[in-house]
Length: 203
Ligand SMILES: Cc1cc2nc3c(=O)[nH]c(=O)nc-3n(C[C@H](O)[C@H](O)[C@H](O)COP(=O)(O)O)c2cc1C
Image (cartoon, rainbow, N blue to C red; front, side, top):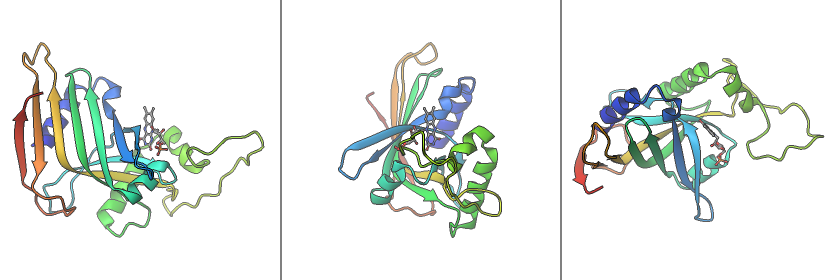
């Protein structure tokens, strides 16, 4: 399935830190696209499910959250330089905040925070992303944190893929370029098992 391919591709590209960076495209309020780089934080497997969701982390005050609150459809795009592959994952993205009712997601958020370095944690205690910095701005921003010390601004985000488009460019290992498109049988976001169909298409 696509996630086995993706995990194998990530292993083969592991020596390149850039292979953990991917682009997340959303739709702005005015219908224009927005795109930015995020760091891949692993696949989530919901309990009693065979699905795989793609996770990353973000500041709840950033624009992407406003975009996703209006339109949850988003696309991730990944280029893996060693194996010369592209993955595009289309689906709905959801955010997990400190008070998420799903305990396993709240726990995944906590684990994601624990894995962050001090430098990566610091901005979540700072001014909102995109705010104008001026010399006379106050040093401190008032941000509440839970009992684990995790600020409310910290969000785990995950994308529930519904279509995955995988392109392999020609290389020494791949004489002919390939493109496989995986399509889920349902558009509804549930944790129930999904059937995926794969199409080998012209790149
Ligand atoms: C290499 C790299 C990695 C980044 N990783 C993340 C990330 O994991 N999460 C995130 O929210 N922003 C990350 N950013 C910053 C975003 O690209 C973006 O500037 C920020 O999230 C604000 O985007 P927005 O205003 O569209 O929400 C990263 C930027 C770079 C250059």
